[in-house]
Amino acid sequence: MTTTPTTLAQTVERFLRHLRLERNMSTNTLTAYGRDLLRMVRYMQDEMGVERPEDLDRELLHEYLVALRDSGLQPRSIARHMSTLRTWGHYLVDRALIEENPATLLDMPKLEQDLPDVLTTAEVERLLAAPGTVTERAVRDTAMLETLYATGLRVSELVNLTLTDVDFDRGVVRCMGKGRKERLVPIGEVARAKLLGYLAEARPSLSRTANGRARRTAGSQALFITSQGKAMTRQGFWKLVKRHAMTAGIDKPISPHKLRHSFATHLLAGGADLRAVQAMLGHADIGTTQIYTHVHRERLREIYDRFHPRA
Image (cartoon, rainbow, N blue to C red):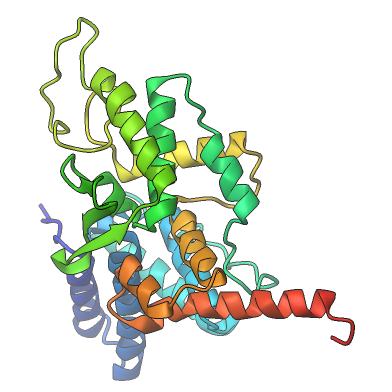
């Protein structure tokens, strides 16, 4: 029985070895496959916090293709990446490393959209208000959405927060990012208040059974927990974001990562320093952050063309 590799990078190494030894591919082809796949692996680790092949899905890969498009990659190159991902996915299925190939149904990102499709500030406001405050889960969902938009954390970083990771006195969140690197991210007053409300009003109820006893689960120290008292998962949070986006009347594709995009774009639009945004996002390379400066410049151009009398 095949043992599942622990990381995406390991599956890429085995895939390239398979192409070289069993399919006798040329050096140039192997180099191209390796370059494309390692770029995907870096993105999944850095941006999505995904390390294992079984955690990949179609939506994550589609977001990756959108990121390629937004970085300026030409349609022909994106199509090559799609082909590489499909071939690699077939290999993973053949080796019983995953059950289904997430790249099979990938579509080319819409080319008429030149900019990353971030949420507007009005859309963010509607999304943050969508859960309401009627139930414990609604209070939790509001706190999670507010925290994500206030900090720009990766969804994996958000769901892995513990009860001791928020310093309310200093107004910062401590999170463990890529490569087990710890960073401190400021959190605004609104998100801070929502978190305090969640901890006082909702989490105690979610952590107790119907007869009032404390649940003994693996989520006992997790900041955000489900109605069963377990730690919230990335997939679970993804689903609730989509549900609240529908309630908010947001018809564009939505994901937790889109709030991270929006966080960075709105900060830069407000005059934030690029290096500061890089530190908050936890990007090792400022080049990863610079896509947001492109977004901001293009939006300024759009405003200028629209309103300047001699544009």
